[in-house]
Structures are given as structure tokens and as C-alpha cells.
Image (cartoon, rainbow, N blue to C red; front, side, top):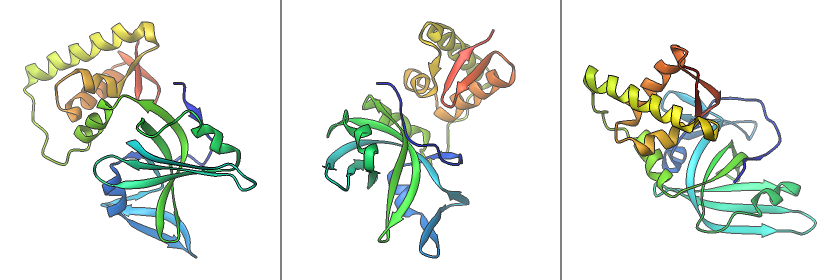
Length: 207
């Protein structure tokens, strides 16, 4: 499914988060208007979430409004759209797994997500995200293991050139190494000019 784009907003970092962590954060308001979410040492406005749709509601009347109830096994949160943007949810159904990049908002003391980009994903990506955000101390790899990992990542990126590049989440899913180590080796490839990132989350081979 192609990316579905929503109106442009001022760009901030879209933090990868689980819903439970979003709900554990502290919403900071200014004159009753949501300003940011305070979580650990971060001030979060945009999030990147992977979750299942467990409920869909559409009000296609004079005041158009639609919501998706999202669940990633750590908690539930609403995604809301308004006006003509409700059409952006027309191809989505209960049971779909989706990735959302969007803005956090608050109404009546309830946090919700105003989406910018939505992509359908395979359910396995829920596990990928959990592994990425696992708070347990990551396994430390030996130098020889890191070298082998770098070679594996390079081969995957080369292989996926015919598909326009490799999704970082797909690399994490394919390899069995810690996501932190994979991201570290991809960063090295980018710094060395062996690969480049045409857009966040995707890498292509330069050689």
C-alpha cells in the first residue's frame, strides 16, 4: 500500500514509541492547549507507532469525523481524523496492522494521534518494534560478530536495490542480531558513504 500523506506540519523528531509509554508520559499544556508530552528526558510532539486496529468509527455527515482505536499490547490510543481526511482511512479495517507517524494531541484530558503518514504493515512488525524499544540491556557483540553483521547488512541492501532500497525494519526482521547493533552498523555504512538514506527508515547502496 502506498504511503497516505496528510497535511504538512512543522517537522519535529517522530519518536518510536509503544502506546503504553505514550500513556505513561506527562502531557504539558499551555492555556489548555497541548504543547508536548514529557517522557523520560524528552519533549515529544510527534510519534512513530506500530499497532493493530481493534475498532474503526466513521461519521460521514456534515461534520465528518473518524477514529481508529489502536492497540500494540502495551496499551490503547485513538487516532483521529477530521473533514475530508476521513477518506484516508477508507482502505483500513479492523485487524489491520499499521505504522503511524503523527502528532500527539489532547482533548478532554485524553491523548490521541493526528496522523501524517499511515502504512499497512505485516503483523510481525509489532515484534520488530518491541525488540527495538526493549529496555533490557542489549547484548554486546564481539568485533568479529559486528564485522559479520555489517557484511550481512550490506548484502541485504545490495539485494534490495532492485526494490528501490531496503527498509531498516525489514533488515531487523530478517537478521537475528540485536536491533541496536543493526542500527549502529547501518549508521557506520551511512557515515562511510557505502549506503545512503533516501528517506527515514530506508537505505540504498552506494558502493
